Each structure stands twice: as C-alpha cells, then as structure tokens.
Image 1: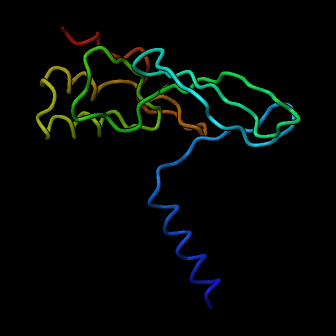
Image 2: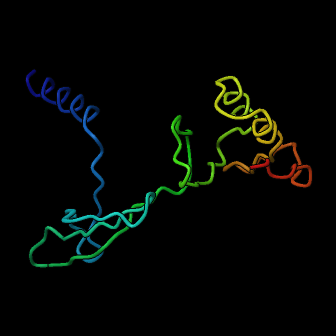
Length: 138
C-alpha cells in the first residue's frame, strides 16, 4: 500500500516541477548534466553539457531555441519576431485578438484573410495563397 502511495506522490510531484531538459551523451548514451548556459539572443541559449559517465568524459555545447509561437504573449516584446505555428487557426486567432482589443482593426482583418498552411496530416486550407492581402501598415 505504501508503494502505491509513494508512486502517486512521485507522480504528483512530477506534475508540479518544471521540466528539466536533459540530453543523452552522443557517445555512450549516459544522461548528461547541464554545467553552464549563456544567452545568445532573446530566443536562444547555449548550454554546456557534461557526460555523467566519468569513463567517457564527453563535454559539449547544445542550443535551446524558440522556433515558433503556439500561444501569443499578452505582453509581446517589440524586438522578438517568431513565426506562428501552422496549427494556429489564423482566422480564429484574428477574431480572438479583435475581441480582446489587443490589435488594430486593420491587422485583425489582415490576419483573418491569411492563408492557413497545410497541417501535419496533409489537408490544406480552402483559401488560396494568391488571395493573400498585402502586409498591414506599420
């Protein structure tokens, strides 16, 4: 009974902790430990990892980078520009932004008429790429 309780407590703790990003050593497969990190830009960090297997001794540098937006920030930084994920329904996004009053009307209209990219399963949008309006002013 206590083993089941311990397992549930451990599972609950796992949901309450931040995810630790780990990577396996490319040589021996042992989990590496982050030793240092430094910012390269507002969207990328360089991380120094060392293999925990002292017989291996590997140390290397990896990068961690934001590559696309899944959910827009409500306090966006003007100097950060990331592409929207193709999973975002742009027409619905424009309506949501317009309802929240977060964007100008001309920008929300522009977003509403953007071409929705092909999703991961191969179905494409009914809008054509040639029907895309020009970029919003500003």
